[in-house]
Length: 462
Image (cartoon, rainbow, N blue to C red; front, side, top):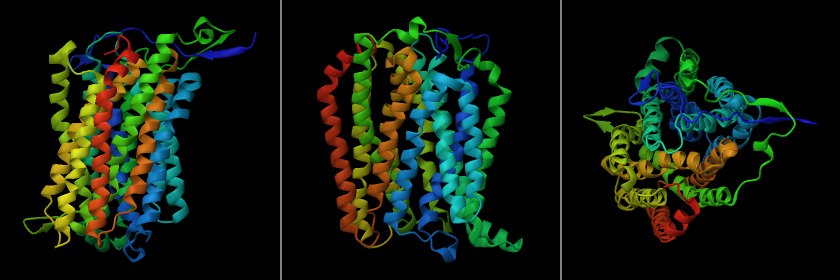
């Protein structure tokens, strides 16, 4: 008989001798690991587009906006697309726990590669981050799901807390990395130390790498709280009942429901991820970035989304628990998410018209991000939780990979759409932002109509 590998069955409920805000103690370990990994990702992302379009004389790469948008889109697409092979590797070979560790090490190496000014080092760093994130991202989310037994109503709440950790990292990162990359104060410090001020971008990238290292240290120190979750799959001789049993009809229907969510999630992220492309450029070139006469780095606006999530995540976490069985179904939450992301980007239509007469107030962006984060809280953490509930037990890693594939395609679209940004043509910006708003709002209406059918596909999963 040939040798095969089967995934280890996770326990229905892990040990809760210690707890974290009423949840399994392992949530603390994964919370802080993901916090620092997202610090590294969002710190780099906050300055990536700006670095690529900055003139060479200012230490940038001097790319035009379309080229930079394409590279940004390809990079962010592949970061999430890597979740599919990453989930497969965890399910069949390394296990989720080891995959997260190996992925984190590779991510850190990628950020440190970006700390060097040479163009080959830039592309090599992006490739390393893609590979590392593919291993880490789907598997740490799958491990969060494995902390809860079937029917545990804390699951959505746990993912909301986990999502708050992501955004604490996302809040701090642009402030730190953006300050190092863009601020005049830090450039003066470099000059006083005899270093090139235009090299400040690379200090921002290096800070992202330091963040990932801190996350890895924390992960290793507190891994004991994970108990049996995410251990390496066991090799067995012959085929086990689990590996040779085909999916049931109900399991296939649930996979079909995941595919419906997949399609609408692409639209959501294509609009939401304008934060790193067109909105980032709008802030940099068409917004008054000053407070009481003090000029702050434009990349700091990348912290706004995270601030809102930190404020709203506890609210939504408590809300879902209070509502219990009366809370909206997953398709209904997705519908609300699409509606609000559409309303958010629609705010950019009047802002673009005003930009024809000079730089606009930062209040416009503050409102855009607030509306979009309401949508995000209804879709993203709920989507993570829903996939872990719908996915067949032996395909959880792979289905998490499919979920992140939707994000990857959305990010690619976001990069391509962001490439049409032109700060000298306000009417083009009105068309760009208006079209995205219309598509998202229409998609919300369509999903609302499809909700009864999707709920049937989901079966007993709410």
